[in-house]
Amino acid sequence: MSPTLVLDLTVAARDVAIALTVAQGETLALLGPNGAGKSTVLAAAAGLLRPDSGTVRLGDHTLSDHQTRTWVPPHARRIALLAQDARLFPHLSALDNVAFGPRSQGQPKRTAHEAAARWLEEVGMTAYARRRPHELSGGQAQKVAIARALATEPAALLVDEPLSALDVEVAPDVRDLLRRVTSDLTTVIVTHDALDAALLSDRVAVMHAGRVVEHGETGRVLSRPTSDFGARFAGLNLVRGVTSGGALRMPDGRLLHGIAESDLGQDGGPVAAVVAPSAVSIHLEATHGSPRNSLAASVVDLEPHGPTVRVRTDLLSADITPAAVAELRLARGNRVVLSVKATEVHLHRA
Image 1 (tube, rainbow, N blue to C red):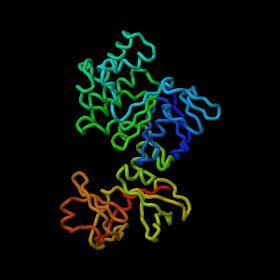
Image 2 (image 1 turned 30 degrees about the vertical axis):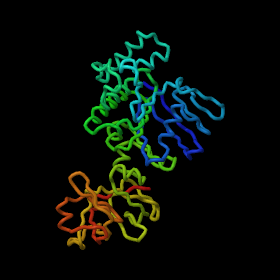
Image 3 (image 1 turned 135 degrees about the horizontal axis):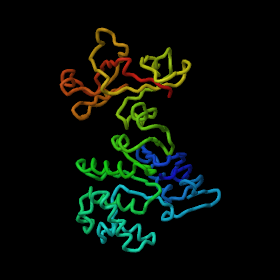
Image 4 (image 1 turned 90 degrees about the horizontal axis):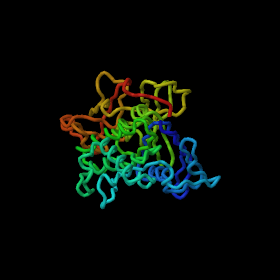
């Protein structure tokens, strides 16, 4: 089993300060908008960037410690970094690319080639062993890059947007490969894809402005996010307010009724509500039957969302059919009434 990775560091120039622990054999997905500091964290862990303070530890080994001036160079850390692009050596065959790591560790050429052949077989690329990078497709090159990263037998793996440069037809195959080869390897993966996070990670950490603003099990974060980016990433509505008689009171005084995930605490405490866009209905006027949550809103935008149209309002987003958009004659600036059942609103402490 791979050792635990501890990242407790500050990079002042980039205003990044985080404290994260990735347990043995666990995969942590690091999420956040561009500029949040995700790549800085990977660079500091890999030894490509020296933190201004704090420590980086892998198992019992301290890789970086500002106070004791400990610094282990990248090649000696037993941490592999898999970048967005394959970055294979253009003059080497796939086999020699994968063998490069073992060779740089001092293994004889024959032993390194045997290890490379095993890893090419592991990623399904044996038939392409003699090909140069320019003879490989994007997906094939990324598989070779994965084999090259793992051929050094790293104790931890860092992955930066591994599928972002791949065609949608190729990505599922590489995603399945990553899930298989990282199942027992301590891994940190940076991604902007909710499917990558859902299928590859055990836990999720959301970063914003250089700080971790949300952290928890993947299923919980994707279904009950507490950060604005986490909600956008998961495609959910997030409403903030204070608790009032078991409901959420919004800043304008209106109530949003829902089901409490846990004790909301005393009235006046911060609370958040999570609502799926598919649970929100749109009407031109208040509906008969008075649903528990009936709220006036203004249409901000309409955009395609798979087979539906996502109608964004100044309060909640709703997913409705194109036929419903036409029937309601929706357009930007329209005043509408949103209705959502209380059972579809999930309340939790903010």
